[in-house]
Amino acid sequence: MLGDDAKPSLVVRAHAPRRGVILIAALTLVGIFLLYVVYELGRYDAGYDRLAVAQERAEHEVDIERMEKSNRQLRTRLAELDTIRAGREREQAEVARAIGDLQAQVARQSQELAFYRGVVAEGTSELGVKIGQVRITPGQTAGRFMVHLALVRSGRPDKSTTGTVALSIDGESAGKATALDMQALTDGKQRELPFNFRYFENLDQEVAIPEGFTPEHLGVEVHSSHKEIAPLSQTFLWSAAASP
Image (cartoon, rainbow, N blue to C red):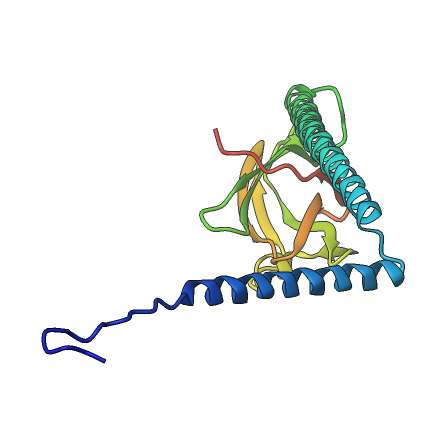
């Protein structure tokens, strides 16, 4: 009972929600841990050994690192071999070019020697036409060349001589031996080249080399208008040099 002056008493009871949250979190963590333990036990029962797997992974990583190192060494060695092979190929190309230059020089000297022998020959009774010198130079456009030919008389000429010269080139096309006559070399415009001289004459003839054809030898055939003079046929190594 309350008196006239008495006031009602207020009672406050504090609730603890934090305890419930902590309890739920703890139960959740325990549940997760139990699930993990069950998961690991299942893998163990199935024959899965975590330590063995970790060790095997480490061994594989070591093997991979060793193989990568070996690959780097092999690539370095391959690069060195490529450099050596390229150097040898350059050396072989230079040697082949030097041999070709020497062969061309010998051929020019032989032709010059034959030219001077024909000019100074005075004691022979046979009159005829000789090839004094042959020179090949590149033309103005690709695939075209100029053949420079010098003809001389042998013996003591007392009058002019006439005749014709026919050119031919043999080589390789598409892996097969191929020969081109003068008609093929002049696009069908010429079959032969006429000459008329007493002592010597220089002839120039442009020839066209088909695409894909590799020339190897130049053939020169000289026919005199005098039946008593036998035809002259010579073959020269194909060597195109720049004109001096």
